[in-house]
Length: 114
Image 1: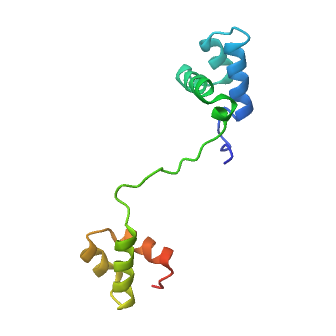
Image 2 (image 1 turned 90 degrees about the vertical axis):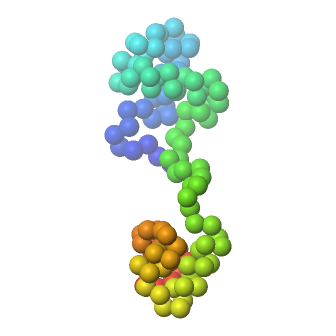
Image 3 (image 1 turned 135 degrees about the vertical axis):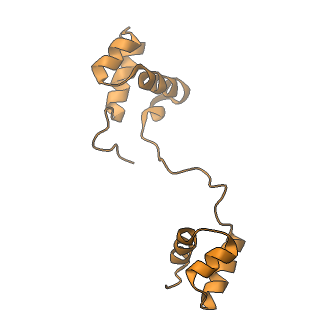
């Protein structure tokens, strides 16, 4: 994953911030000001570095680790069966008590045509 174009700190900038605070003796406030970020952000990167080392300074995915309200495989098969019986998306959504957009994404993922 790459940093977005407006990101204040890249992994190199984060490493520089950590070096300034831990090795060169800068205060967190001074290092934050020099990097153009808040003290809270600096403390976050320092904590990640202490916990994970150099790999803690790399970009992470923003994708959720889990989706508790997501459709189970069984639900997806049931929705697919209804769609193959030529049910309209709105009716499938009502039957499943889900949003039409959720059902539509499921159908797209499964390769069922509109």
